Structures are given as C-alpha cells and as structure tokens.
Length: 231
Image (cartoon, rainbow, N blue to C red; front, side, top):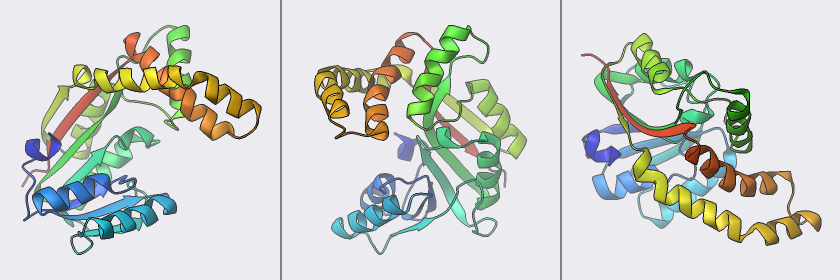
C-alpha cells in the first residue's frame, strides 16, 4: 500500500528509516527493484538484515548500517524517498525526524510512512496511564496526534501532506496479537516465575494485551502519511 501510494519504482533511491530486520528494504528491492539503504540504531538488527538480504538475493540492491534517523551522516538531497514503517513512534522528537527527512530528500522527493498516533493530547489521568503502560513496553516515548505530526511536517517544509486514517485496516492484526497474548498468558506467567523470561520478554507479552485494550478504548489510531519536498 505504501509503495503504491508513493509510486516507488526501480529508479528510486530509498532510505528505510528504522529498518529493523530489513523487511521493507528487501520487499521493495525484490518487488520494485528499488535501491534501498536501511538504518537502525540496533547492531543486531543490521546483522540480521544483511543475512536476510543475502538469502533473498538482493544484497546488490540493499545496504544496511547503524545510524540514528534523526541525525544521519548522509549528504543533503541523498534520497528520492524516505520510508518509515512503524519506526517514527520510537523517536523522542518527531520534529527532529521530519527535519532530517526533509534535508535528506532531493527536491520533489517523497516521505512515506505508517505509524501509531494518539487520538488526542488532553485526556483523563486514567486513560493517559493506560496509554503509557503500552508505550513503556514498546519503548515508545510518546505519540503525536494527527494534527501534531502534520504540524511537524509543515514546520520542516513539507507540502502536499496527506494523512489517511487506516485504523480499521489494522484492527484484525491487533485482535490476533491480543488473542495470542491471552492464549500465552499461563505460559508467560510460568516462564516469568521460573525466571526463564526476564523483564523484556514479560513486557513484550504484556504489550500484546495493552496495545489492544488501548485501541479498544479509542486512545490511539493508525495512520498512513505521504508528504513531498517542494522542487
């Protein structure tokens, strides 16, 4: 969906900002012939991404390196597309990301992303605590609202901003994740009791529940965003 929306093709040079294990870069290289450079702040993710690129025969069209997507060493106008799939949520300052993306894009370049957004800024203390319980388990400092993120894009200089609410499209997967978490509850508690699982694994399991309960409470939404650098 994102690739179609941004009309990504073999002529594009793309930065995969927060690439994880390289899934997006590999898919784009295989299916669109795109040249992709994925960056992450986790060295283990970069190692896996390289192995997966080799396995999928796209090592010649992909590259992966350690870098913070809010402060990279790439030159101005290095990319045709900046792509970010569920990674901007981890940025401490969303404006820092939008400003760096704008700098890295060539004139006329596109920013395309999908991510989580809080439904509103002001809400009850109970709802905020509920939301924060999910944030902490997913290592998310905070989420912007749609309006706040659109402001960050405009401040950075982007135009042609389109933000699509795709919450209903991701509800089935959020539900499956929740049901899996409920099914695994006895095992997760036993593993925690036996100290087979540490705090990180326990938090990961609990997040499968809280992402769904906060969604059902209407505390967050899922959005697809495209914006352009003038030129």
